[in-house]
Amino acid sequence: MTPAPVSVVVPTYRDGDALRRALESVANQTFQPREVVVVDDATGDDSSEKTCAAARTLNIRLVKLPTNAGPGAARNAGIAESTEPFLAFLDADDEWHPDKLRRQMEIMLGPRAPLLSSHRKGFKGAAWRCLEARPQATSITRLSILISNVAPISTVVIRRDALRHHFPATYACEDYWFVAANVLSGVQAARIDETLARADKPAFGGEGLSGRLHAMQLGEMHAHFALWRQGLISAWEYAPLLIWTLLKYLRRIAVVTLRNCAVFSAEVKPQEQ
Image (cartoon, rainbow, N blue to C red; front, side, top):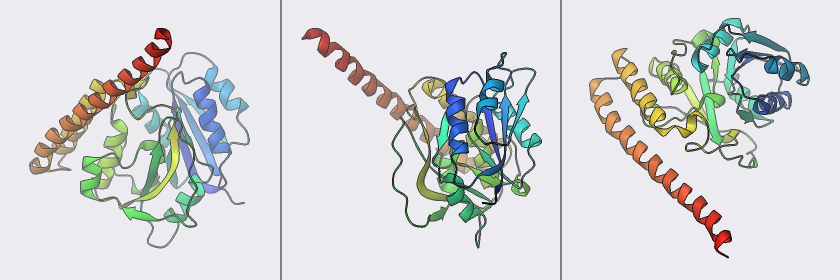
């Protein structure tokens, strides 16, 4: 099988066994990428070297940053080191469906192909669902990218020559800003209505960055502010987005509170018996 003309960029920082799982999911692809660029964001040990060395049948190039720069800067370094005409991104704590690249590249290399594509992402280690015979894609509109993250970074493939913006040097929502800035700059984008990536943690409220709801909120607000300052959205779009993000923040707090109450109740009941 001819390898896909894709560079997979994987930033990592002390991800342990998660990085192994992510690379294993790339090795299991039915349509293999030509290269994988793993960017070690100054982990400070040799764990990334060992994990990359043990990975199966992957053309891996490891890039080690001298100082910790954050996931956005790490991805930018991976883009700079990559060589293929298409870029795919995979976070070290996510994994791909075995058919992810094949089905997504069918869209990217087909007639009337978008310049950027994404798909759904599952959470909490959700089982893979059966896939349709042929993937169906719908356009990512200006409204959809502003009100929701319809393109989580581990679902994104973009043509290198379509890049209008790189990742900002921030630690929260830098991936959302990257996709939104490119789409709002005119990069034609489409979304496949299939779950082809997943995380083993909840969408928010779990461990790591996704668990820091306050950081997520500030990051989302900063992303919208930066889009406005750069002229990618108007003041009439920016003002309602402030209210919208606050409503989403309150909803996330409510969901996490209810989830924690349910876990607490489940732990207390056995002790009472």
